[in-house]
Amino acid sequence: MNFEFTDEQKELKAKVRDMVDKHVLPRAAQIDSTSEIPWDVMKIMADMGLFKFLIPEEYGGSGKGDLRALELSIIREELSRGSCQVDAIYALNGLGSYSITHSGTEEQKRKYLPPIAKGEMLACMSLSEKNAGSDAAALSTTAVLDGNEWVLNGEKIFASNSKVAGVIVIFATVDKSKGANGITAFIMDPKVSKYEVRPFQVLSPHDIGEIILKDTRIPKENVLGEVGHGFRVAMKTLDVLRTSVGAAAVGLAQYALDITIERVKSRVQFGKPLAEQQITQDRLADMATEINAGRLMTLYAAWLKDSGTRKSVTLESSMAKWWCTEMAQRVVDKCLQMWGGYGVMMDYPMQRLYRAVRAPRLYEGTTEIQKVIVARELLKLYPDPVKA
Ligand SMILES: Cc1cc2nc3c(=O)[nH]c(=O)nc-3n(C[C@H](O)[C@H](O)[C@H](O)COP(=O)(O)OP(=O)(O)OC[C@H]3O[C@@H](n4cnc5c(N)ncnc54)[C@H](O)[C@@H]3O)c2cc1C
Image (cartoon, rainbow, N blue to C red; front, side, top):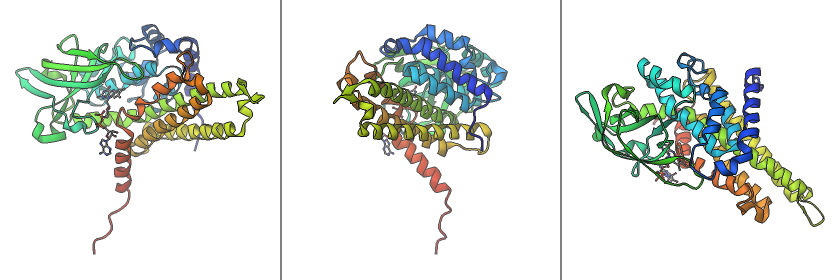
C-alpha cells in the first residue's frame, strides 16, 4: 500500500492550488454570483493543460488511454476550493467528453476530443427531463431516423454548460416500449443542429438550462455508441465521474474549514478566541476527521478505477459521491454556525459556500439513488441463500 502521490501528481496539485489562489479565490464571490463563464480563468486553465487530463493522449490529452480518475479528483478538489462554478464547468467538460472517449467512433473522437483537450470547446451532457430525473430511463424525447438524419423532439432539463457548449451528448429514445434499451446517445453539434436553450437560475449560479428540440436534425453518423445502448453510455460515464463529485465536495469542505479556523482563532468573545472554547475544538476535530475520511474514500475509488484492479468501480464511486457530498453539507453548516451572523452576510464568504454545497447532493444521481446503487452492488457480493 502506498499513500503517496507521484511527483507528477504532487506537482499538479501544487500548480492548481497556486492558480486557484492567484486567479480564482480573489474574485470567487463575483465568479460564483453569476452564470456567466469566467473565460479568462478557462484560458488560464487551458494554458496550464488542465483540460488535457480529461482526454486520452491519442486525442491531444494526457490520459493514458482513458480519463485519469485520480488526476481528475486532484484537480477538482483544488478547483472547488476556489469556486464551485469553475469546478462545475471543468467537470462538465469531463461529463460531456467521457462518453465520446469510451463510446465514440475514431472519427468522432478525432473531431470532438482535441478541441476539448485544448480548452477551445466546452462540452455538455444532457440526460435529464422533467419526467425523467432519478428514473432517467423513463425519458421521452424521441429520435426517428429520416434518411441520413435522426430527427429529435422533446425537452431536456438541467443541461449544464448548454448555452456555451460546442458539443452536447444528448439522449433520446428510438422506441419508448423498449425502456432503457430504446435509449440512444447522440452527439449534437450546435454548428449543425438547430435547438433552443432556455437558461434558468439555480441556488448557486452556473450555466444551466432547458434544451428544446423541435424537429432537431442530427446526422446519422453522430449516433454515439450503438442505437439502443445510450443508457449504458450514460451509466458508464457517471460511474467514473461520480467519484470526482466526491473530490469536489472534499475541496469545498476543506476550504470552509480553512477559513473557519482562521476565523475562530481571531474572533474574540468572552475574553478569548473562539478557538479556545472546547465546544469549538470538538467541532473542528469532527470536521477535520470527516474531511480526511472523505478524501481517502474518493482517492481510493479513483485509484481503483485507474489501476484497473477491478472491472467495476460502481460501488466505491457511488459511496464516495453520496458520503462526501453529505459530509460537505454537514461541514459547511457547522462552519457557518461558527461564523455567527457573519455567516449569512453577503459580504462574507460562508453564504457562498452554503449555497454551493447543496446541489452536489442532487446532481449525477441524488444521495438516495446512490444508496440504491450501493445496496444493489452490495447485495451482489453475497450469495443467495440456498432454497430449502
Ligand atoms: C445544479 C444541477 C445541475 C445538473 N446538471 C445536469 C446535467 O448537466 N445533465 C443532466 O442530464 N442532468 C443534470 N442535473 C439533473 C440531476 O441529475 C437531477 O436533478 C437528479 O438526477 C434528480 O432528478 P430530479 O431532479 O428529477 O428529482 P426526482 O427524480 O424527482 O427526485 C426527487 C426526490 O425523490 C428521491 N427519489 C427518487 N427516486 C427514489 C427512489 N427510488 N428511492 C428513494 N428516493 C427516491 C430523490 O432522491 C429526490 O430526493 C442537474 C441537476 C442540478 C440540480
